[in-house]
Image (cartoon, rainbow, N blue to C red; front, side):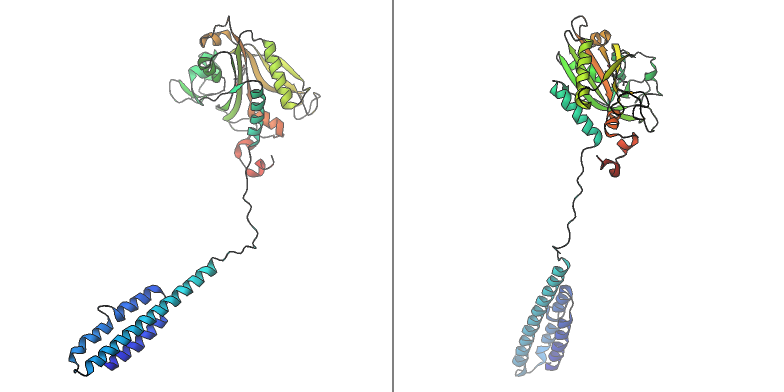
Length: 341
Ligand code: DAH
């Protein structure tokens, strides 16, 4: 029995010393010292021994158990230390490495232009209103005096959601005039920027989605001279004092009279150049006096109140301001383009 124990001692100590990790070490503990382990197995045979041998062997077994336990404990500490050392090595932080600067974005150039316009109108006492992009044809067309049969109501021009052409993506921000008149107390001074949608193929000057800014004033005694004075002031704030403008007669179903407003080309001073396509003038918006039929349709007495409205394209404005020649660049969000502003 002594021999068996010595053999076990030698084998166990070797195995413990050579164990590679906590799991195999635990397996060794179970194998040698566990309830069904090898040492217990040897002790079971104590009954065969003589009365003198038994205490000696008992003592030897206890010593062996203590020795193995200590050895396991020692190895466990070594393994833990090695593991910690490896971890420390892997997680080293080299504080001398250069840092990675996070890339900060900035506002889109078109929204910079919009912010500028908003500031100008806010200073003039206008409110900024927001409205639905999915619109009833009633609001997008009918209440704006655009009757059934008008070409802009065709399926080839407008995105509809239903066969009856009752619901569409708004083709202009002008329905915001109607929403404002139906919901806001008079007098009204508002602008309404937002997205609009038309069935256009994408090219350098067209996109099926673009942005407009609608503006409207309704009060007693509002005239065409208020329209001209206000828009001239806005344009001077936007393009600089002394900017020359002109108003040309035009037709819109929801204004009467209607006009388009041009600014004299800031690049060539009106002589004609590539920026103004040789015209000397750049068209920037459509406007007019709100049609009495539109006022009446919104429950406003056209004999008491009058008003003016305008609508301008935001992309065109930003393109002029930042000398952008292709509309697609505004929507593609290529950072190499956007970083330039
Ligand atoms: N909604 C028109 C368009 O998309 C632009 C416009 C013209 C708006 C005259 C107005 C206006 O408010 O009075 O072409």
